[in-house]
Image (cartoon, rainbow, N blue to C red; front, side, top):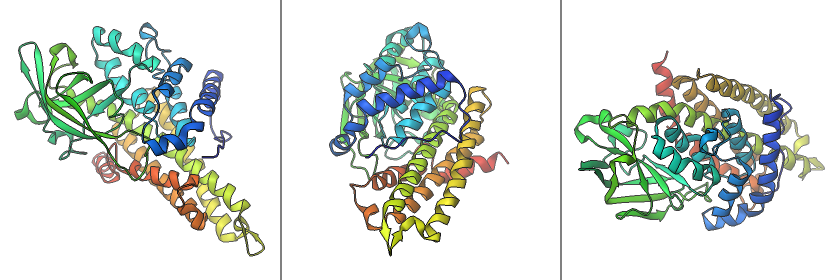
Length: 384
């Protein structure tokens, strides 16, 4: 993908340290990400060297406390990485690690778990995944069938997972399993499983419509034994931990959606101003310029909302309904912008070689994972 730059003119980013951090992220991505985008798309996996480069630059898991090798920064810095990564046209799983998996260890991990895993997650030497979804359980996490039955000082894990981001490369997996199958949601626990455990197997790398560079996979647990010390938090508290982390997960998706929508819009403006038609450019037609004007106004409002959400989240005031509303609004906006931008490209937009085609493909799943748009509406409606 050709490289454009995310315009910050309508943002409220005034903190110099955040601006300097963004410059670091942009330079790293220009050097270590953009040149490899097409190859990673073809190969369906991202080089581990990119993870190490991100770690060396200090942009992986920036909120990790200094005691464990992190920078101990607030969520604004995570949001910068989310924005710049998606705007660059990448779906690399570094954001899953920085925004989702690391939070479980920071907030609920034991001191031993933190010292063992957090430094590697910060450096990029340890790649993580979280295994929640199963063939028969998606948004309804209470319906998971994978079990972790205690046998002395070990848990014996049995079951399968699917649609797992970082599935082919993960060294460490946070597995949602039933430690008490009869207790429903109160029987769900979160357990760390190292990828070299006997009985653990990676399934196929799934063939997706979009986000093809992300190694989304199946996982199988055939009587995998792990020590009881691999339990995160308390037995039976897994479901509540998952729910507590969902606002940040959904905010992350919203941030990425807004950045993806902005990139699609910028591609549309660029293309329509260059594409001749009937003695003028496509942009010169009032229908085109009016559509772009409408999208511009929505994007402007969208950025203001993202900044509001991030500020509330840092202050601990972004609740489940607000996070769900953010995910709903921004992912639906992303899809509307990407679809309109592709239409403005005409036949060229349907060619995989054009940036808008990839942006359009990658956007579609945003309205599904992390809770579908329909589930978001349900959560919001319950808060009314």
